[in-house]
Image 1: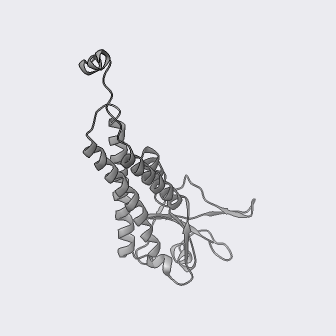
Image 2: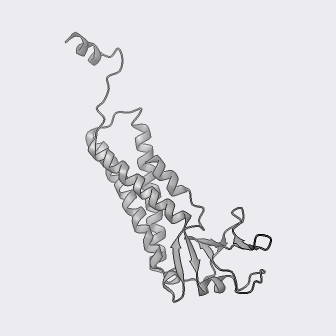
Image 3: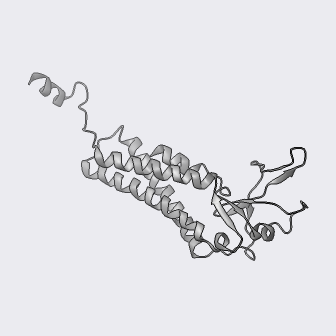
Length: 195
């Protein structure tokens, strides 16, 4: 669960997908970089995007990951229902997955009943489900526009890893309840020793 939470937090907000097509030119039309053929791609996310820079010495496009993400121009990109649902599912998965990870951390110090343990499994399974549902973002009009292509990139690949970690964690929680251990020197341990 902790690894799922870390994977979900790994993205920076503008590296969910790589966008190619006419929308790249629309979003970068005010760019100061003038290159024949235009900027070939953008790294896009739920809230912003990042543009690569041309490096003439290497003759290739590279992204400076220390640069700031750029907010979408609302005249170019419409954040419709699929966009909003993707963002909401991403948020819910982060909250539920983080809550499940925290619960499991505390299970090392506290004894929880089997019913409470099962609810933790439900929470982590819901995180995996919501993380998977966040991929509805790829149905946005920006990705479906003729000539545009949205491909998996670092953020979406990290979300796949997060969903897999959470699904594995949920299955482990459902399959095994850790029996409480008696403390050394406790009354229960003394009774077990004498019997």
